[in-house]
Structure formats: structure tokens, C-alpha cells
Length: 177
Image 1 (spheres, rainbow, N blue to C red):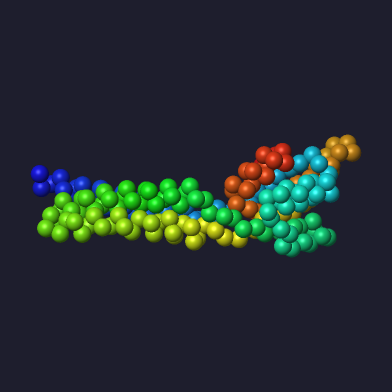
Image 2: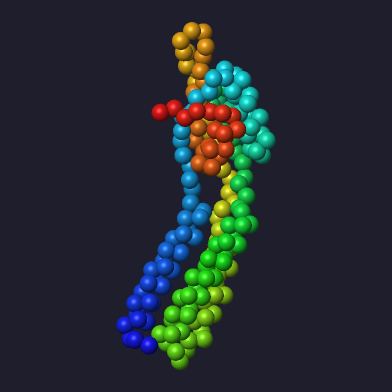
């Protein structure tokens, strides 16, 4: 085989392995965001809807500041079996490719490098241990008077971005720009 092909293939495979490493690391990254949402419901009825919504999603009330209409919910987010298996498979494919390239570069000890595949379950274990964690959702409700006698409720929410999207859809909340 051409001598320039193997080193360039090794460098490209090494770059892909680095990308895979950071992809696995990013799978457990905190994705908390803060948004302002509006609702046509009154403040008290909206607070009741929010409490019911979070209680249905296995969150519990962690703190309440009644005079300021602030509530903090806490819940445990379980890791995904699918994602743990997916990351393990990606890791197996990446380590297999790296092992094959290393085996071609060092043919006398090439079989040892194929054993890198045995490290692939560490990716799933890493995800499983780090992804299962307690998360908090902080809410602050405000009333805003609109034209006429109608009042609108504004909510400032700090939560995981997936939780925000699910809450907006379930309670028909509109983002405030």
C-alpha cells in the first residue's frame, strides 16, 4: 500500500475519534435555558395549571415564594436506554476503525489494537451515570394589564430546553420577544 495513505488515514481517523469523544461528552451537557412566556389565563389559574402539569411529570414543589409568585419544582431526569446503547454502538464503531488503522500501521502487534473495541461500553456507562440527575424548574409569574379589563400572565421559566418545549406545547404558552 502507498506509504502516504496510511498516515493520512490515521490522522483522519484520529480526528474522527476526537469528534466522537466530544460527542459522547456533550450527551450529558446541561442545557438549561431561561425564557419568558405569556398566557391569556389569569395568574392564579395559570399557577394551578403549572402545578398540575409538573406534578403529572413527577416533579415536586421544592420552594415557594408566595408573595412574589415564584415556585421552584424539582424532579429526577432518568437517562435514556436508547441513547446509552446508541453511544455504545458509536463508540464501538469508532474504536474498531481506530484499531484497524493502528493494526495496519503496526502490523507486528496489530491484533492488540483491535481490543480497543472492548472499551466501547465505557461510553454507555459514562452517559448512564452522568445523565441521571436531579433537575430544577424555576417559575416566576407576573400579571400584565392589557387594553380593557383583560389581564395577561407572564412567566419567566428557567429549565431544561426539552422541558420548556414540552411545557409550551402542553399549556399553549407563547414566547415573549
